[in-house]
Structures are given as C-alpha cells and as structure tokens.
Amino acid sequence: MKITFEGKPSFTFMHVDLEPGETIVAESGAMTSMDSNLDMEAKFNGGFFSGLIKKYLGGESLFVNHFINKSNTTKRVTLTQVTPGDMKQMELAGNSFCLQPGAYICSSPGVKLGLKWAGIASFIAREGLFKLIVSGNGTVVYGAHGTLIEKRIEGEYIVDSGHLVGYEPHMELSIQMAGGLISSITSGEGLVTRIKGSGNIVMQSRHIGGFVGWINRFLY
Image (cartoon, rainbow, N blue to C red):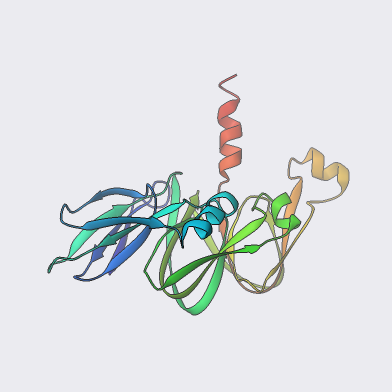
C-alpha cells in the first residue's frame, strides 16, 4: 500500500495505491474517486452496536467502506475529509493513540477503533466526552481543519480549547482559564487545555468552530 498526499496543507487529499489483495478501510463518504475495478464493501463500524456508539459518542460514521483490490494489478482510490485542512499518516506497531471525534479518515485492516471516556475536562475543552482510540498494527490517516502540528512534550503544555487533535492515551488533560478571570474574558482566550505527561501530541492551527463563527457574522 502506497499513500501520497496532495493539496497540503489547506485542502489535502490522498491517493491510496493498493497492491493485489490489499484493503483500505475508510470513513463513509471519504472516497472522491477510484479505479472502476476496485471492490467496495460497506460494513458496520465494528458491528451494529459498536458502530452506533462510535457514531453518536465518537463522531464517526455508522458504516465504514472497505476498498479491496481483487485484481492482479495496482489500483488507486482517492480519499478526502469533510472539512478543508491537513491530513497526516501514522504507523502503529502495537501502540495506541487518541484522536478527537471526527479526526479519523482511514486505516489498514490491522487497526482497531475504540472509544474511551475522556472526562468532563475534555468535554469543556470541546474535545468531546469520549475519545477515539486507534490501536493495533498498521497505517492510520487522520485530519483536521487547518495545518496539523506535531509536538513532543515533557511535563506540561497548554493548548487552546478545540485545537488538540490527538495525544497518547497515558497523558492527562485538565481545563483552566487562560489567565485570571478578567484577563481570560477580555483577551478572548477563555478556557485552555493543560496536558500533562511525556509523549507526542498533535494540534490543529485552525478551529472549525471559530471559522463557522466568523462566517456567521456575515450571514445575519
């Protein structure tokens, strides 16, 4: 399987070249084009009840599409995400990673998707009550609005609410004001997310909620 990205970082999309016998699993609606002799099978996202939980609690689709190359030559499928922004590829080797709801785009069959309670702090930070956990062995592609920024932290780090895309499962999240009460309100920063631990995080340079709010000013 070979993955190539185009349109980075604002309008990223991806080409997946599948060798004979290979499969890529993608979110419902992610496909923009594909070779005519690729097979596509829609399946529940981990089973019926598991799919319902992922849809309503994890921000994912009820169904996922399996693109299967049953031919004897390389075939291509092109995938994208709903929001304009960046996409990144991550390789799992028995480890796991937490993603914000809606960030998952596609993965190889060896990757499992699960949900875990994220806590009230995550909900207040607009990251959702539940976190999506990708685990297993294989390739994962995720995306978000704006450019994706990877950072290694040791100790504590602060990220503005709504900008945290992913982090390692052992890391702790808490919510606090950006400064004092008055400065937090007058600065427009409000609440921020404090991340504690040693590991990798991924942030997005733009937040879709802020973009929607900016557009709404011109509609009413």
